[in-house]
Length: 553
Image 1 (cartoon, rainbow, N blue to C red):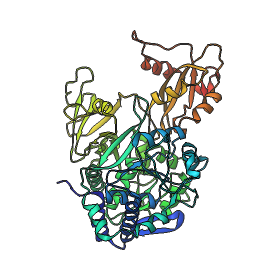
Image 2 (cartoon, helix red, strand yellow):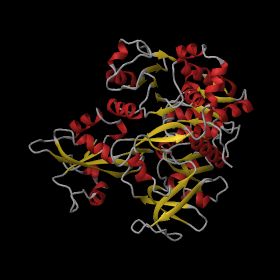
Image 3 (cartoon, helix red, strand yellow):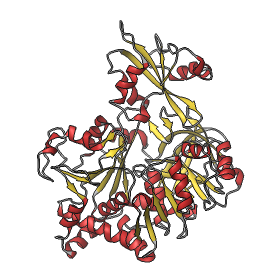
Image 4 (cartoon, rainbow, N blue to C red):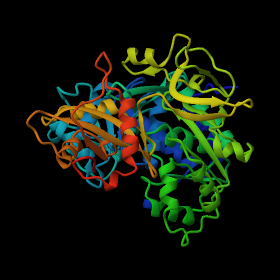
């Protein structure tokens, strides 16, 4: 039933099948990659990596917006058994440092950056030797594993290669050596590391194998009914599994064309659907909200027929509007976690009632059970409890974090999702709430503990507690309860400015509430449930409150 080939092997078969059909379309640069060109380019870069000394099991990071090169480099790494570490483009310098060090990356691909976020400046500030060293010979006391930097655009840096140089170096690699390198890679070995926030603060590196990624993409793509006539608009970031595995490769495996957009921008997305005759749009709820809030009269969206919503719960009202106003008749709720990729998904043949209200049934290869939070016993049909998952596509573990792995996967191999669900007699699952403390803002998982740790380092803050508050557009927003340090008068702008140097933008609290004390348990733990209840009544009137009581950032 399951495919036992590596990602590179599966894609080689796909490319031989579809040959001159469009695989990747990049409107920004007016570039098109056929399936034949896609495999040729990825093999050329794989040889270049071998020439740079990259070996099976080596970790390589990538920090860039979506592009064809991103996909090609993934295939190149997969071909020789290197592990691609996918970095969030919103990462600050301190976040970049943590992930590069924790993941033990020896090589990083990156672009200059976008808007006012400079990937290159952040990296050179961490590794000043890049300004004077020779390419491939970086020596950094702070990042001892990192040796090689490759620029993916027209940026220049003395201590870095560019992509063309990597391809040129690859010409020295013989065919037999290249083939032998590929033969050593097996499907059970690591393909990627994706970093995800957790309740303990620091992000955790989720290790996914070729087997998990390939097979999850196949079953998800089959349930989405992707085919060679589909054109999928990719606005979801490739550094997330929903963009990388469940959109890009799930589509490519079935011969679909991927229209690559660097990042989601409402007007561009609507324009590309029209110009490129896109049939599929996958997104998080906020993306659909932004599109529906725009003037749709100037856009021909008649080509759209299917798509999925992932990353956060979607309201019944939003689902209805997507069908009626965007014309996406086959819209699928998709539920998953980085640790298990896609877990449940609606099918096109499911009744409208289920497609509108549930997150579908488990994908093939996924087993579920629902347990009572207090007793741990399995609940009856229709009763609420925590969703546990045992999956063929489960992670290999958190990289260099066995303690966190053991907390997430129990001794029987069940993944504790932290989500409260109910299941009906036909096996359809309904989200009822969330046990975990994680905030999901616009599809991004955000750790309150991570934000709290940053805020508490500010000299004017004695203590901080972060919770979620409802948001119509993004699903949830971040609210920080702050106790000011003795003799210090904190203000929201100062806190915001401080946080911006240590946290990605989407992690900065939108709301800050100054309080004198927190409700605590007998053991001194903050009762966040009480904080949520306190804010519940206030939040409806928050915009009418004085800034001293509730500050909107």
